[in-house]
Length: 102
Image (tube, rainbow, N blue to C red; front, top):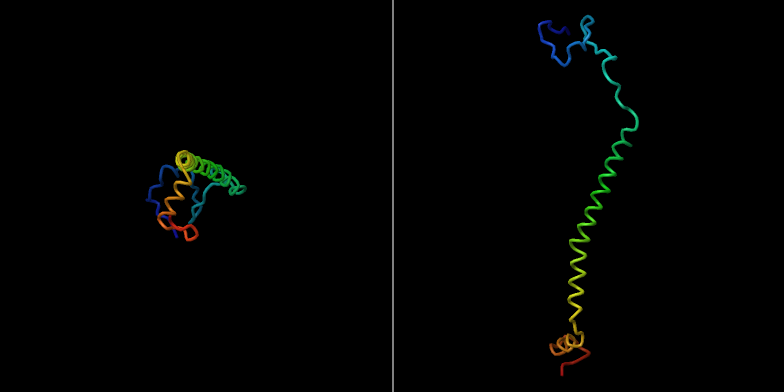
């Protein structure tokens, strides 16, 4: 297949093409060598670091957004809680079979 000589060559390719008969070949001296080794290791280092930061962020959000308010709510509830008063109320309501209402 012959390339038409009237087709313009893009400016970013100008000077990089060497015509040899019917084919177009790229000059290997002008192109940088691709990195063929340790591609996965380089990507994994980036993604592991990112995943570690995201997990720390989620843990901090859970601790300060859920766990700490829950602990404060339990502490507030049990500060004024009278278990005997609650037991007598359940006993009067007939919740327990072994402790009939008085």
